[in-house]
Image 1 (cartoon, rainbow, N blue to C red):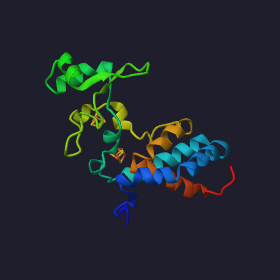
Image 2: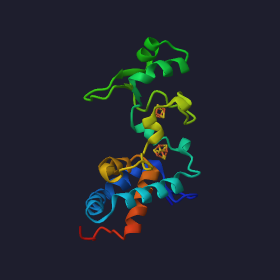
Image 3: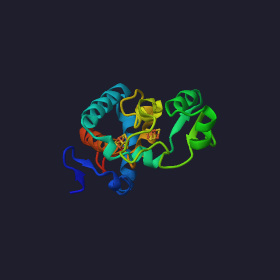
Image 4: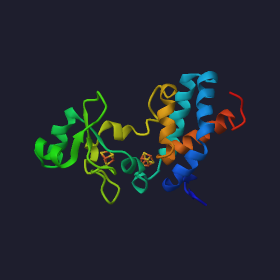
Length: 181
Ligand code: SF4
Ligand code: SF4
C-alpha cells in the first residue's frame, strides 16, 4: 500500500500524482464549501483534523515543504538568524539569501530549493528560530480557512497532512466527484 501505515497517510513522493488526479474535484469542492458551509464551522473542522493528523506525525521523515519551497526570512529576523549561526548579517545574507522577487513582502528568500537550511537528518539549521511561516505551514490550524482555500489546495500536492485533510473533509461533508455545486 502507498500509505504510511500508522496514520493512513499518503507517502510524500506520491502526492503530486494523487493531488493532480483530484485537482478538478477539489476545485469544485472549494466552490461548494464557499456556497454551502459556515466559515466558523469549517475552521473548527480544519483545526480538529490538523490536531488529529499532526499528532505523532514525524515531519522529519517528510520535509516536503522544505524541499519544495525556498525558505522566506523576514528582513527583521536576519540579525537574529545570523547570530544563531555565529555569522555577521552580511556573511549570513551573502551565504544564504537573495532578494525575494515580485513581492512587497519585507523578506529575503534562501538561494536554493530545497531550502539551504534543511539538514540531512530533516532538521532545520535555524532550529527554533526558523521563520514563523515555516512553523505555521500548511496553515491548517489558522483562522479564515475559507479565504485561503486556493493556497490550501496547492499545499495538498506538497504536504501529506494537507492532502489527508482535504480527503477527510470531502468525506465529512459527503462531497464526491458527482456532487452538484
Ligand atoms: S527555514 Fe528551515 S523550516 Fe523553513 S523551509 Fe528552510 S529548512 Fe525548512
Ligand atoms: S508540514 Fe507537511 S510537508 Fe512539511 S514536513 Fe510536515 S507533513 Fe511534510
